[in-house]
Image (tube, rainbow, N blue to C red; front, side):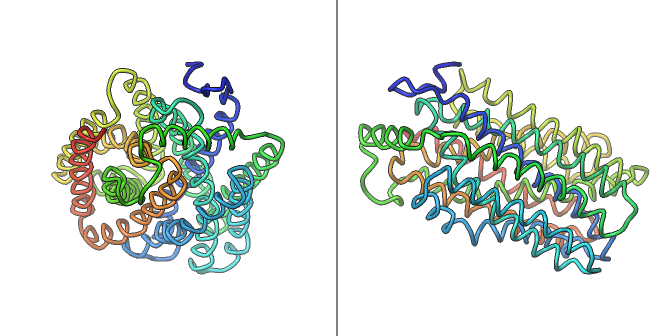
Length: 403
């Protein structure tokens, strides 16, 4: 394990890695809260399923717009200053929920979510290459999956806090702001800690470029890398699928069994769905000792596709189990697609990271489309995640052949 975080020059990245992993936890919590907001907006503002999809749209369109500027920020001011900038913007977006709660309209909340997402985008642009670069290149996929496990904890905590403070609240718009006040406080504390921590930026950048030059991949256009180009599509579809499954989990479960309340469904999402998501990320990192990332992505893609097919059949308990299993099988997809996509990119790593983060815009598209398709029957909306997981399976197969 020690070698996993040690550079060729003997620099140990373990402590900086733990700090970066904490950032994964924070944005996992922020994303987990969205899945509770989706249902609450339907009730508070009398929205249709498609209209409530604008909760996710506000966040993921922020990622799309901010992705390239975020990459420029990282290149010009470095990882540490860039991460601090992202954290401050993250906290500011969370604080905007307070004035938004004073207006009986969803639009101020959409603006707050957009600002928050811009901060998250900057953080992710820096955190992903940091996680992959803090040690030997052949351990990049394992490291990012370990960091992503912390992200999985955030996905559990987010819906739990949201269910407690929002779904279990008084039903007013101020309930929506409560968890974001807590988030803002924690983010500012982490930002303060980061100010006093030194990140090994120069060492990471130098080693990444040296490794790429040895492999003959540091030169040439970024678009010459096939694994990267297909990773863009895979990441777009994955984020869309994951966001769609998470966003309409409460709708699906309450329609499948009308005796389940939205509060109970929220707890099932947090403890059951996100719990399996977290376990999946932990086990994925463990499996990668013996199984290549591409092989694991292919296997999980096959099972996720089958699970979606069963979900669409609406076979009561069987379909309920299937949607839970989907969380496990899609758990490793984002970090693994990312690691495969930037593998061997060298000097292009930051630029490639920006493009891959831009693909998070899939999360803006899928919820609205799924809401339209599943307005009368939510099960039909899960056709889109099924098709997305099928493509990811094919991408995994293709990546096994790429050296």
